[in-house]
Image (cartoon, rainbow, N blue to C red):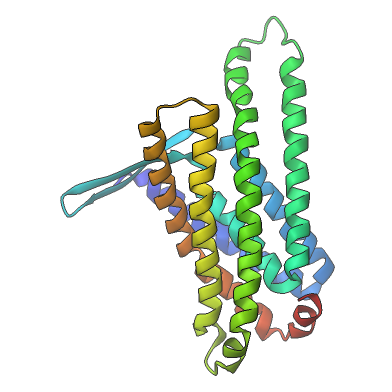
Amino acid sequence: MDYTVLYIILFWLITMTAVTLLSVRVVRKYPVYGFILLTAFYVTYLLSSQVIATRISVYDFGTWFGYSLVLAAPTAAIIYPFISQVLDMINEVYGKKRAVAAITAALLTQVLYVLFIAMAVKIPAAPFYELNEAWLSIFGLSVGIVFASWVSFLVCSLLDTYMFSYIKNKLRPRELAFKGDTFLNPYIWIRSLLTDVISLAVDSVLFVFIAFYIIGGMPFDVVAGLIIGQLIVKVLIGAVDTPWFVLYKKMIQDADYSGEMKQTE
């Protein structure tokens, strides 16, 4: 196995834990600022994914049962599950309407991002700037990539939000009737795991097909390989990050934050 993958996993685990603990602390003490903080994380993750989405990476997971597991996928695949997770964190405490508000704010930042990039591309570079062609090749393509991401972002974010809210309301009586520890409540795991896996799977197909086949003009067999690689990477990470959402829920619930939750549903 490539040790770079292990380094990425370690960095991913540390980042997810830090964001979860910080979010819980702010949401518990300052509910209004908690929503702002979670939305800021949401926008940051989304912008970061757009910047690195143009790069195709190779993920070497080693050899298993005689077969090498090496996947090619856009580098942003490791970040996008963070986006889905934060959206669930907003939806859990502040409700569906606030989640849709966060999606709207994030989309507006994407529009501004594209406008600024398009404006910068039109400005002539200084004669002594030797990296202009490399810069244009990256950010010129990025505009098309971001356009493709708008479609997948809206479809998948709204799908995640409404599906999460529906499952939560449907299973709420069973969730409240569960007598064990919050971290072991299966109904909390179900809504986070199911919504993340489905929305990330849909995003993988939409984004790669539009960005690299329709806009990028790549051969279909190459695009199909990217879709499969991104499906595996995104869905795997989307499933693995579920314990952090359940931890977030447990710490919020243990702090007797139910009043704010009822108010926002």
